[in-house]
Amino acid sequence: MINFSILISSSEVSGPGGLFDLNATLPLVAIQFVLLMFILNIVLYNPLLTIIEERKDYILTNLSEASKILAEANKLTTQYEQELDDVRKQAQLEITKSQKIHKEILEVEVNISQKYIDNLLDTISRDLLTKKEIALNNLDEIVQSLATNIETRLAI
Image 1: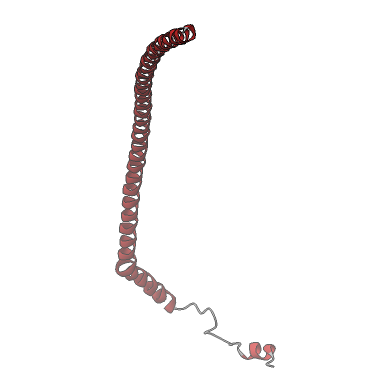
Image 2: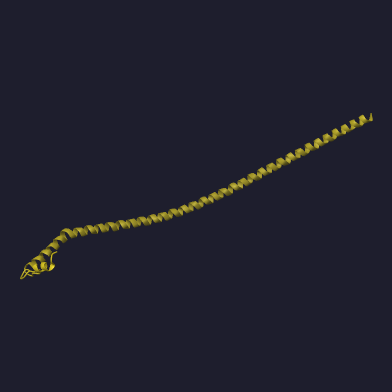
């Protein structure tokens, strides 16, 4: 291992030209630094700052356009949802009306059919009653004729 105290003691400089030597090179270094800053500012920093500003403006413009488009899309979505609700309500009303009309038509047809069946039953009942009366009358006549035949045969 290296002994650090020996290293530090050997690096000491005695006399002029130490770590901070203030002489005529200091203003020259300062002028070089200012000149380099000025050149870098013109050559590198200004175009870079211009490009950054343009990019920032581009992003802000795109963001504002996107927010306008989003607001318009939300407005259209709301409008279309409202129209869709209105159309659904209208369709439901039309379905209800149609069901009511069909129910009324069915009731009318059922009533007409019921009346027809009632009339048919009445006609058949009357016809059966007349046939029954005719059959009873014929039977009565036959019974009468048989009774007279039996009387005549018994009387003989």
